[in-house]
Image (tube, each protein chain N blue to C red):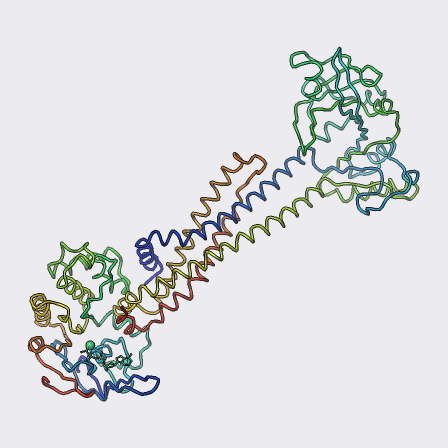
Length: 402
Length: 225
Ligand SMILES: Nc1ncnc2c1ncn2[C@@H]1O[C@H](COP(=O)(O)OP(=O)(O)OP(=O)(O)O)[C@@H](O)[C@H]1O
Ligand SMILES: [Mg+2]
């Protein structure tokens, strides 16, 4: 008897007891569906994070003043910390080969007024390359030019929300004069809508040249320096260069911190991986419980069919034939469970985001394969004992069994 | 050369406290084409003997030769093959698979001979036709009369053209009319040259055979008891 015959005989047997077979595989169905679904939720979350950060540009380092993030120690008095300056940014851009652009940033809040309307919003002072580095698109008008920055010209680019609040949808903002703080700024551009990224509404922002922002907020210190690295491979080199350059400039003190966006993404990805693995592992336990259910029903089935085993042996079945037949039955049970589990998981992964918007899902093909192989293993593992029991029956005793 | 040769065959069951010696040196031969009845009182070991001849059981001592080959040295798997190829069993209680229709019961031995499903079905239906059961091919055993069930069982026993047919009280569960029908079938098979060993304790049944062997006190004698 080959495997196909064994499968044929066992599917006959299962079809004779449909309800029982269904109830038996339910545990496996739920286990498989849970494993696949949890993995797909984890993957969905990871892709969501990657995509959100990706919107902010890739290969980016952010240099912030102060040395806080890693050591967690408190700085007593601010005099020890040298703040970051425009000159620092210029130095980084000029002296490091790995760095494409180093953009000085100043962030503050201020009132912006146009006609009789006004709004309290974020004012972001940026260098000319900022829009390119952060993947921000200008919808109408233009970007800041190098002349705007160097001449600290009073020009601004409005975010979508600010523009709509001040001027309404219809009118073009170009050339309008808005009041920020005490000075008038000419509108030279309007941002393309970007929406909320990681909880921050990028559309509710006004950009001005960083030099203008220094005057507006009356400061020489930068909020941060946003650095675009030439390639992912050069990130370590860029970090090393920045650390070396700034430490020398800051009298040998490393009083700044270099944050890597990709590192943040990587750490979050790792955390998500661990959480996914733990949850999927717990779900896998229910698969094992399903396997115990299969073993239980297989033992019942073997003793119910003692006489059948005797008859089959009398007409020429070997022990191996009987073993194969019952093993095929338990594997068939577990794989059918696996199949329905995969279908259920796929349906849920598809339907879930429609009902729970904050749970993006992404079906991972390898989790389907792993779950299926695990099913196969469960079917074999829990099927071997009943099948061996069936195979070892003495045909004479089995034939006499009532 | 005799088809079946038993030399000093003994069978004992070892119970926790004592030993039951059922067969104590059976000695007989069956030639090809013979129709032999085995008789003996209840508990005398007729079924035990038939199981040994049918390779379902092994003797405790003694030699059993089938077609000149010693069955004592064969592995379980080899004995299964002998059962599949050379032996057809007919039981008192039919022993059909209740879930399967008649034709699937008949083809069962062929499943273990490695034939294709189409060929198996063709031969099973042919066999059912031979016993006038073609219109019952899709009926399950529960939908068949006792006589019909036994005819299905005989069809199953014959499907692989075995060297011997072994029948253990094949008429025991049948009324006299279906019993007579079944015996007619056996006699017909005998005329076609099939070797038959039939266990019974009814004289009328034994009379249909060419020869009667009687088992008493674990040994066999020719003639009736
Ligand atoms: N597994 C066993 N363990 C112990 N004793 C057994 C076993 N199988 C059979 N016997 C004994 O062997 C003896 C012969 O049994 P067997 O079934 O061969 O008798 P039989 O001649 O076929 O009887 P019947 O005509 O009633 O069918 C009986 O006494 C029975 O109790
Ligand atoms: Mg008996």
